[in-house]
Length: 328
Image (cartoon, rainbow, N blue to C red; front, side):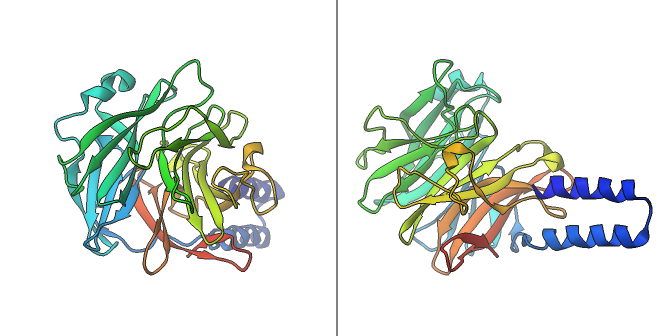
């Protein structure tokens, strides 16, 4: 990981002694590596978010949903200037409190627009627990207070080896609906959904990725060309400027996998190709979403500033000659 590499490089320089040429070489190498990651593109206005998800509206603007009390919303006319748009559930979400310990904070929503309405999958849990649930809400406008809770999609508890948070909806090439989800435990999972209800259609839980119980979460499963790309976040969020989140990707020709990284390592065996990591004043970028927009595929994520506050990051996605994504 880049951050770790820079710390080790710094220690090597000190051990070698205060030799100007050595220190300059080490600093130059670290700068060159950091330059491989672009800074977030320009965004303005109200850009404080955590775990953002974005959708393009029928009118051509953008709607962002993100973690917060009763779930939070922002809007933008142009993917640059953002403003607060209130809460999804301004009157609260009492059906979630059995999973949140009474907290109003709901996590990691996934927003999309299909068949004339918005679909919002979202998580209820407490930090470090897998007593968790994913719910679905829908709206025809996306506005604060317009959302109808459609009920539980999947839950987890001490008897499960997965954690039912961080949902993401994907529709496959045949029109089938699927929900990826997961955080720590045995990793990222996939369930089939009914296209008519948006709810779970069978009892099978498929494995997509894992790190042997290590830090992996926030799946985003998207189709581009002949591949399905599984984007995930490795390592740790929620530590301000000390966060080590980084964005990884693998791909498969099937929505159910197997997913492999650029080196051919299975994501179920800890594989993943790194796309973005900490650099300069951009700390712990992660919990990404991918939007297929008119001009480009777009990567949306949060990162932490030096102050520790989380902000919205947006970059464009390109694909190299071998079909692997990179950001610019």
